[in-house]
Length: 326
Image (cartoon, rainbow, N blue to C red):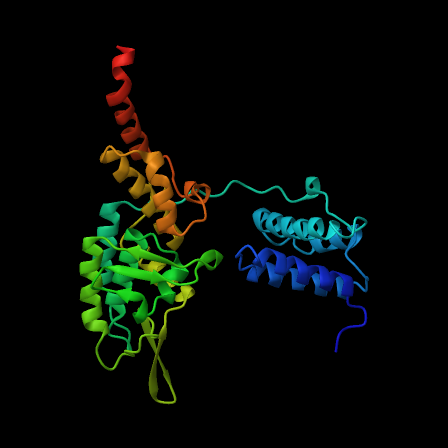
């Protein structure tokens, strides 16, 4: 039964706002979770709708979170209120000048090719789990796909056997971010490693159905072993342990996270373009398409001007325009 004190007007606004955002292909699942929590908070205050005082109390209840997290949540509520204001000019809209001050994002740790080689050696040395002899091979191919194809962590764990075309060396990434699907061609080395992995994966007792996970894990239930996909959290834990075991860190001693592999892929792609003497601006749309971005603006977030890239860009500039200086 609906709480009689529930802000019915806010309920309707949330529904319309979520439906509007999803027409653009956005998932907005976490945003929905946050807005439902806001609605429950307003209901517990016994208020008929969101107001300045209720919003202030809600912000104080978020004080235990980091400034960046609080700012993101406050911004989400403001977006909801601005959307609502189109049809309800008198509704409350938060003042962003009172929002939490976000801190600069921590720069990613760019993983180098020698460090990836160290990760692969460490993966090969992993002990198989009691129910899954494939554990070293699974972690190895996960590293390869993350680094050489720039896949998101969720895309890797959601891959199914039917998504793999080993003959042509392509992966079908289905309904990823913004509900976009794409075909991802792999490098020759990645294809070779993938075929090697499949020769072990496509055997009994593993699940061989097309809908079975490419990266399979095992669990025992009532004496029977069941095969299922790795979760994003379990893959993150495995790789975090591997980063430490392989001694992978930057000059400041920071360990990378799984997302940093995607940053590393983009930086390496940019470096290859400079080394080959290619036109970077022409290649950016291709890189955006490969990474599953809606525009090169999203891709630019992953392109970091590290010293190696700066040196390559400077050398190319010198080759083309040094005669003008001389």
